[in-house]
Amino acid sequence: MTIPTDELSYLDQIELENVYNSIDNRIRNERKNHKPTANLEVDLCYVFRELEIRKHRTDFASKYFGHAPFQS
Image (cartoon, rainbow, N blue to C red; front, top):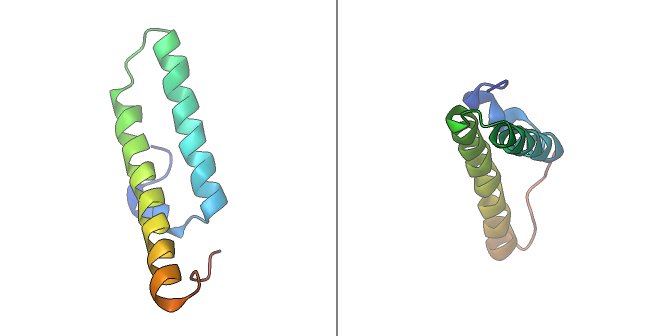
């Protein structure tokens, strides 16, 4: 992964989505070329999990505090 997993939380939402899309595109290209994608798939899981955590945090804040938390 180009970004260490512990630094994913420092990216803003748009940057994180761009990383997700970039890895997803790389996986598709590697599969077309019959190359292994296991490492990319693991990276994609880490990024997806970070996106999921953020969505749950926003949903929780909206439900219990009446607003979404500040998003950078």
